[in-house]
Length: 128
Image (tube, rainbow, N blue to C red; front, side):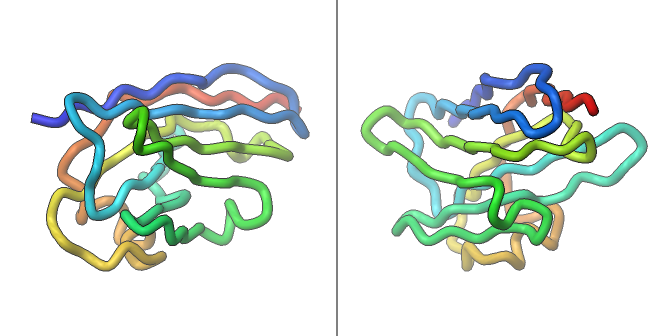
């Protein structure tokens, strides 16, 4: 059974940066890894995804500000978030798809139904 553990959340002012990490245990590789977020009273939304070959996809809200990456050697997924805005405030979750699927922006739009393993979430709060 794969477990995912996120870290790196916190409170920052608008314009600041945070880097989220997600460690997979006992192994990491999946067909697609992604970050999702959920703000209070809102539906979960996809933020960014990365395929096994390193190709990345981003939601429009993340383009130009967030960067998803992975270091397979240490079983870790990252989300570098720059120029943070108050509307980025949410709980951020990493997720793994363990079945073959195209790791494109479509998996972000579908809201997570392609992903079978989820972390516990890490809170990100951006103040104005």
